[in-house]
Length: 222
Ligand SMILES: [Zn+2]
Ligand SMILES: [Zn+2]
Image (cartoon, rainbow, N blue to C red):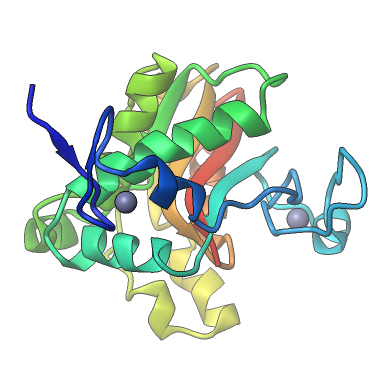
């Protein structure tokens, strides 16, 4: 077996490409809104839902985000997305599985994972879908399959280049889910949850195709 090297400090380590010290120092989210994963003050054991979610809940029934979008998770995600480097995806996916297990031990595990899809044109440019690279190690750790059951039918401008209302319009009907999701309990996986518009659009597409329930699992919460 090949020795593992920590992708952050280079130290030799076992099990995964991240040493225990660097893993401990990551910006883990401890107490968060169950619905959208925004960090909440640790006032009680069960912080419940944040104000915005109580007023206007997103379509997914729960969200788990492992980390705050902060150093060094932000760098690792940029490396995965634009640096043509897959090891950060494997490590972050394994850590996301740990966060899912510890945040939702009482919830039923979804039956399959659906990665947020890229448009085929962008997939050709990048060569891989970062959400799929994150979904694979999560699926392995939780022993559930990855279903590439959602397609991006419109090549929309990157969300980061748009303002709020434009962001929502930009994604309207941008996703279509396959009939195979009908009746299934699903988890949507993505790299970063910012406004939640992308996750919401994929969730709606899955419900339109008959999904029984949808939760969201993201590596980082901006
Ligand atoms: Zn390290
Ligand atoms: Zn919330």
